[in-house]
Amino acid sequence: VDYFISEAPENGDSYIEYNIYRFKNMENGGQKSFLIMSYAKRMYGDLKSAAKALAKQRDHLMTTMIEYKIPEIKVAQPNPGK
Image (cartoon, rainbow, N blue to C red; front, side, top):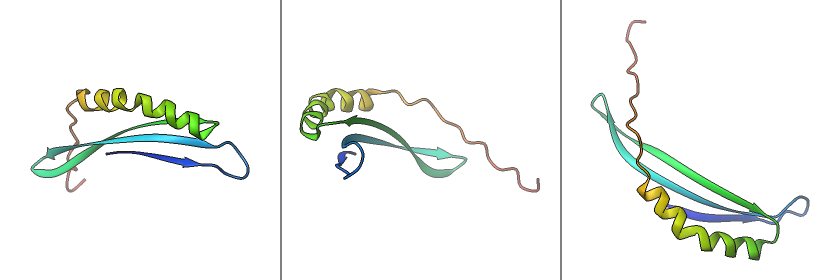
């Protein structure tokens, strides 16, 4: 999942942010769950030029996120009675 958000507040700097979320199914001790890996890049200043710059980077950022090898993650099981 990827998306852009932007804000041009009355006070403060305008910004645009590009976000990518990658979901991976996982199983932990017989329980099904999922992992969310996220990436965000924020640019401040002129929204139009920042949006163009981020749009040019989108394909590279998406490919990098898709091809990234997520390490195996193990979650410790709670020890009942302790």
